[in-house]
Image (cartoon, rainbow, N blue to C red; front, side):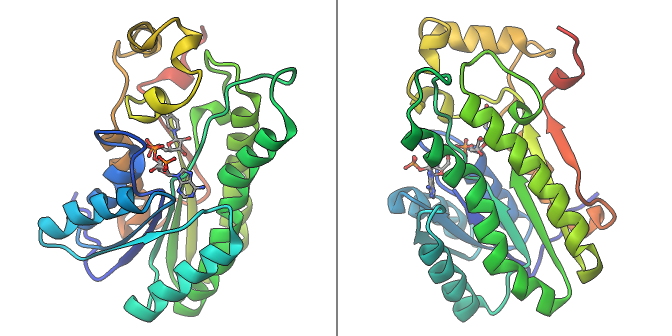
Length: 266
Ligand code: NAP
């Protein structure tokens, strides 16, 4: 099966990477481009967006880098207006941004709870609110939300804001999928399990859950049914499939990319 996204425009929020190497959003942006799409790389960190866009243009494809905070409606409106002005269409909306706040109900303060909900869930609502009208006008579009297995299962970390926000992304995905199916739009979620990306080294408090970074890697590998975490390309490949016409009858799913972790009892 060949994923052909030629002439499509993909808007990727969170297309940078929080550290060196391949994050899920960076890999997805490059994977969309390798499948033929023009890619708009948006990130809070302009340099990270530019790095991803640079990889794409160096490979001979088209990319635009923009900086924006996905929790800001004004900034999302600006991004969408710029994409429509430059490219005239948005075929694929990829919502990758997600932050993990370590800390339970006793430790987490209200501001951090709100930030998790705003960055992880409100961002999906805002992006859809401003992109869907263009997809509806075109009669076609695909939205891919990067959720998490943590929206269905409690992993080894104490991070209820993350679990709750990702559960909300899963249900929001279904609500949007059902509501907009007759308008030619599909909305699906990818639920990564334990993935080896820079996020697990840059998120404050994650490694400490297991002692140190090396111990965290060993624990995550051991928890994975395959004996190894997945990588950002596993998540990216699921996303480009869901965004493609090959997935034209797949709508409202929560696709686990987890090596079988969700299927395991203990
Ligand atoms: P990442 O390396 O942290 O990349 C996300 C990018 O989003 C970073 O460049 C980050 O910039 C940016 N960002 C953060 N807050 C933003 C905001 N408010 N507005 C715009 N951009 C923002 O993470 P990733 O590897 O691409 O993975 C991210 C997604 O995968 C998340 O939704 C996460 O929940 C999900 N996921 C990951 C795993 C895993 O094991 N790695 C498992 C399940 C789900 P800064 O660096 O400046 O913050």
